[in-house]
Image 1 (spheres, protein in one colour):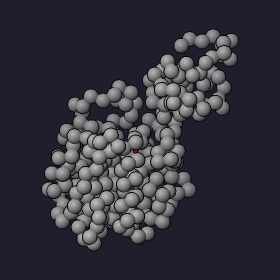
Image 2: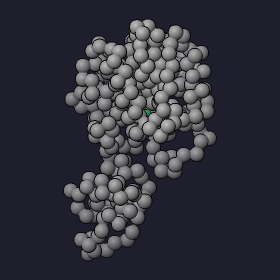
Image 3: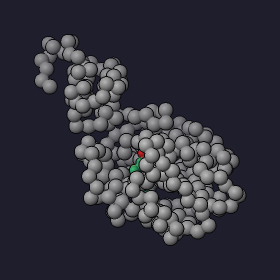
Image 4: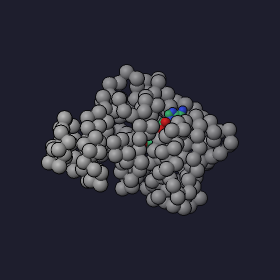
Length: 271
Ligand SMILES: C[S@@+](CC[C@H](N)C(=O)[O-])C[C@H]1O[C@@H](n2cnc3c(N)ncnc32)[C@H](O)[C@@H]1O
């Protein structure tokens, strides 16, 4: 990748991107996004693609049709999380009115909560995370959006304030420490957002133990889950909540990736 300065003008950026392992589509997207920079900066950014995901190099990503800032302090939002959001929005529209209170727990970039607020502007949304650095990103992403931002350890701040919600949506860290993950992910994305003790189940255990204290009578809980965790998580749910309906949903690739739990009153339909 050594280039002489006088050759900058003749550089084929596309082949440069391809050499870093990017697909044609991503290469074109990347080049379009850096087109305003001078050639030296363009080459500098392209070189980073060998070691970093393009979303971190561009400091932005797209989620549910909206652009969000991302950096190494937040997880890069994934496609399956868009499906979690889509199903939750459908459920809110069907079962709640504008008075619904929603909590996005472990918000990271803020993508889940901010997207729900953009899609359903009249509802009341709180986003929270334990990471101050992640919340700085979420704050930037939620500029000019009426959303509450809370820093704290899982449900503790809400249990302490006796605050309750109708909808709790959460994509917690759920990767077991022993699980081998892609090197690009492991070397770049925050481990606080990826890994969980207790074979990946720590956060489900901890959240579900406290969740009764922060739920309104009429509620839905929406969790993203690892594709092999369904049975373990259902056991944790059943040990902590009664009089509920549990629904597991598959992602577009046919893997069990979402769990919805709702109260049984009001003859609710499934998610
Ligand atoms: C898998 S990431 C999800 C980020 C974002 N919601 C998304 O779906 O792209 C999990 C998030 O949980 C946060 N987190 C980890 N431990 C936490 C804790 N004890 N309390 C609150 N948030 C926590 C991490 O900082 C991270 O932002």
